[in-house]
Length: 335
Length: 196
Image 1 (tube, each protein chain N blue to C red):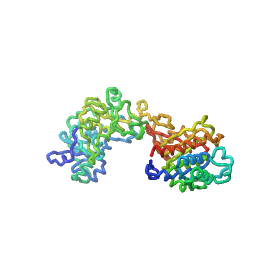
Image 2: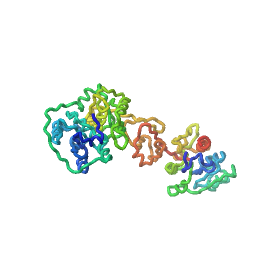
Image 3: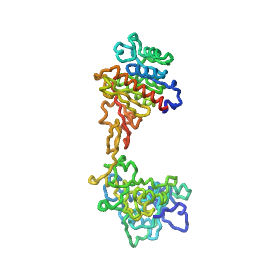
Image 4: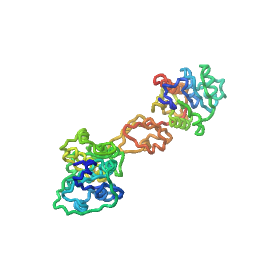
């Protein structure tokens, strides 16, 4: 996996085939000179992101390949792909392209924003294609794993969850019917792999390796990354491949598919909350009002959340978290 | 601890604005304990007059029956220490006047009898970030229903047995009420002595 610096694009000795994965409208408003547009949504998310229960959300191989060659990609083309969402769109493109044997793909490090902030030339308008011939031979590779293969190989795999802390814990359902994470999964929030400078480039190889090692991952582990719908997972997979991990795949159905099959287990963090100094366990995210339901008698009680007063309205809004301390003060007449 | 924007360590002891809301069994005994400990400046809030039935537990005397509690209590406190600097407000606290009465307070002692007024005073004082020392459950004996101190935060304490309710038949008795009041006063004395 190659990361291409924005300065390398201006190297006249290389003829890059540049692909913009942003939306059509954004492309037409301004894009890198010579870029072709291929919005992620076109070939990634057919139908509703949350409504679909399909095992794979990828476009079919034949459609993807013919689309690329219609755009003018040929066997010898050196593709550079970019996005404006911190590398996620590009990573997704990279994974799908590898799966279908389009190997020569680099990612523009820092993407559109990094390019523009360097004052490099842009152009506007619609995309013009110059189709090339259909490739003689396609070698598909295994960068995507289906649900059935995932289940068969499960004990042998290191499963990585690329989502946010709230999605991982089950606090944020993200439109899914159930929350939590896959049994035995390891949490690696994709945002940990973007540098937090203004360019939003990938973090250094060394940093990716050290984060992965800290999570117990080894270079030759069979790794499967998932997220909600396979985009953030592609980002983490690409980062790991970039850092030298050899056997990394994306579970394309991700939580979107897994959470909708009631026979598949999810692990959730049990939240331990102190209510009036008594330990109470909760498995589901809920508001303070819901958590104190069994303790409240009149509804007039004063509710304190981690030592702070909560109005009744805020009790309905505030979501509990592990380690919270809730005190319910019921006043009895007499003074 | 910050009280009304001032760090408690930097406030002169005599300069802390203490408001005692309710001057019955709790309030009269809280004030008495504070004055004996040398805390001489405070404001007393109560709408009621001393009645004969109060004498079984409140810090008043038979010759004061019929007088407003706030002025009777002030007189008693000044007999302990003539330098006591006591402000009196003979009103019933309510939604309409609570902000005027409590806005400048640093410390609020909730010593009210009525349950809904207890809630009103405590809610206001918590939202206004006062040091709040409240009471809940002061009836019967301490042997049967022992009073506890619940420290909810650095600035919110509730003392009481959390079980007895005068409205549902518990009897208020001198010793128990005095214990709860003494614990309320003790919290402020502890903060001033050991945490400033």
